[in-house]
Image (cartoon, rainbow, N blue to C red; front, side, top):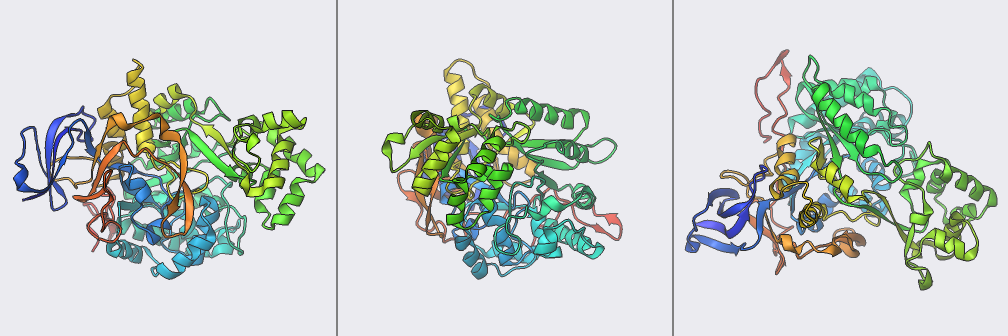
Length: 598
């Protein structure tokens, strides 16, 4: 008896080949048969008819910030309903492996814009481990929705080795502290972690009282410190996830050099992030060219992560992460007292200085700082909804910054507005998506819960492909698009995922390509399970008919989520990077892959 038969679907195996009609049988969490011939339905407990639909491997998100949510509410339903069956955590130097609960919370909550008062109690209750071995044991015993894989964060290691205060200072780690970080990295690779994530941009800041508003610990490191850890990654064929300086950007060349494979083994590097920024319209050329340089000339194994969707950011009042990019904006972000905050923005001297910084061109980072591209979406004064701050300023005869500050003073967080940082030009998005040097899967899910809503990014990418095909100017085949979302990622990250072949894990999506409607970018609110708060989401529920994880139906459009999903251990698993090699033993490198952790 089979557990599930999927019949009559257009089958994509995740390799990049085009779809063909086929029937699939699943048993004990595995794909056991793929056949053009019909499979007798009486041989299966459940039969899913996929006529007119696509049958694809489950999608991967290789850059999420689900680190806290997967502990509190591991079903991660907002991703699963969009066909995502594997997520990576531990991104941007922030993981929850070695540090104490309060340290982990302070590293995470301000940077990723999830309330500290929601995260810290969860970690105080649930985080009982203090090292990689305990971390892996927790996930082996923890109920999961989608599969989870993980980086170890450099900021996490630095705080665990040096303490919060020293880790967020210019103090160089002692030799003992450096050896402790090396040991933490080795242990994380021993238990199957993907590699290490790090950060060099100082725009992301600490939460809590001990190091409030200090940049993340990873940003205080020197290349001497990084290179000792890179040596371990290179030797063991593990992955570096890196982030260049968002303002100066020049240190991207340092990453290119560290990744090179000229007369040595290359270090696998995945970098944030390839975007078509409004603040830098030529950046997409630089990222794609650097990918070519790193891989073709320097013989590296280097990829840029890209978001295959418009980078729309929804904001409330003065709560704007991008203010960290310039001095007066950072001053507002650092002000905890609300009365002091609103007093500050009404000081003429401060407003003048703020306008000066907004107009400077050499400090521009992700945000283009154009208030004519700041559109009011909600306001107690409904006559303002749909207008931008320049239009409002013109009506009242004031500068757009003054219009913004005046409205924020009057309505506070009831003033909600939206802007688009990047990815507004579809023809440029086509180039970024199709590049062999980009990875799809940068969704930031689980973070910026009141600002971003990218949970449906795989469907948004497929809509780019479908729209281009309908316009008569295709840039990618359907099979190539599915490959970019599945097998391309799984094969590079070393994961048991991303394909539908006999013997593979049965992580499968049944989707309707005709359900990719134009409302795919519309934003709504939905409860965030386990946190008691609402978050922004984008949903396109007509596209996904079913999501199957480990051979069990987790989600069906007509029935929503299975009753045991989120409460059963029969769905997601912790996935290892199978390319990570065993440690050196007695100065001889073992010629084997890392064994499964027990």
